[in-house]
Amino acid sequence: MTDISDDGYLCLMADNGDLREDLKIPDGELGTQLRADYDAGKELL
Image 1 (cartoon, helix red, strand yellow):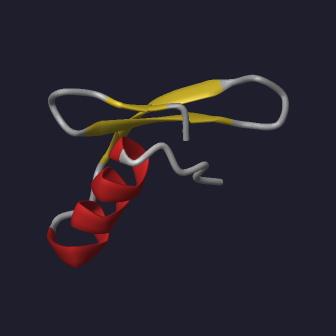
Image 2 (cartoon, helix red, strand yellow; image 1 turned 45 degrees about the vertical axis):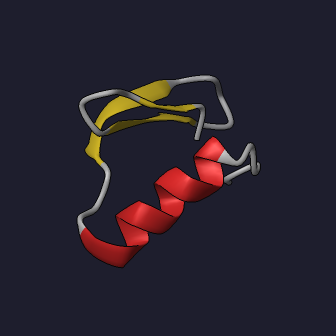
């Protein structure tokens, strides 16, 4: 994961360098944890 946009979409990079930016961060605890880990600078794979 390379970014979380202000409107809640994830930016994911595949091994070949292709980007996906059409996946919305999940609601609930998982989404909250993803955002907190990203904001804390953790590497999310």
